[in-house]
Amino acid sequence: MKALRLNAVLILIMAFAVGCTSVSRGLGSVTANKYADPRSGTVWVVPPPQLEPPAPDKRNVYISYRNISDSNIDLLPLLRKSAQEQGWRITNDPTQAEYRLRASTRFFGEVEPESGGASAARTMGTIAGAATGLGVGVATARATDSGLAGAAAGIGAGGLVGIGIANASRPREWALIMDIVLEEHHDQPVEFTMATDSASGTSDGAGASSSRMASSGGTASSNTSGATATRTSNYYPHGIRLSVWANQMNMSEEEALPEIEERTRRVVTQMLPL
Picture (cartoon, rainbow, N blue to C red):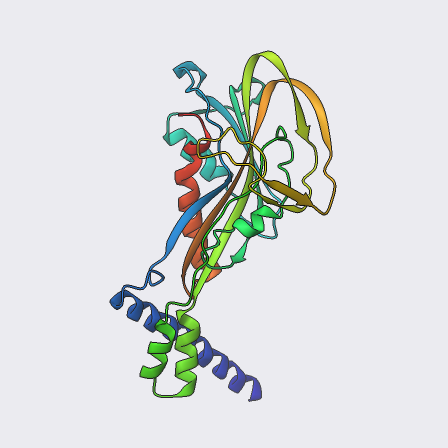
């Protein structure tokens, strides 16, 4: 009997929470609160390189994927399908590819609203397997309380309703951070220094970037030492770090993931040369 009562209470609490979220989002739509509807975007912590467009017969790519985060996300089918939709031929033989895109999910979880996952991304050090010299650093704005929670609490009939609406009105943001190594084929072997380990640390506009977006100068610090190695290869490895984020009032992980996957699908071709 006690178990049945406990289950009934839990069901009521869950229904109450869902109801508060729906009410908050409805009020947010009326008051033009930007968190009423789901939003998503990207932060190029280390942006894609500016590469020359390939000839039509050179538009073949090998795509691999691994997930070293705590999540169970598998983006390999999405990455391959998106590249194919943009006219790329997928090859299963990495030795025959003009480009090789190796993606790794480093993190998926909740982050500070409006951070875009940049703070978490800055602590991840260098991009393992990429040529060194690319910095990690980005400036983003942080969200402030919209004030909707206080207004909604005044409408409520009791303290519990006010607290529930207030909590449901707060924005929650989720981010997926990926490291990508884009290897570009050269007819002649090239020598480069490659990062062989990803050190944990922070950076502030660090390094020079051969990106489409920007380049910046600054300083970097790390609390562990990363290893490097000199290598000669016909494939030059460009490093890319991408954070894909989604936010909304009281957004759950299950609500965030489809938004993040759709945004990731749309930016695949920004990594590959146009």
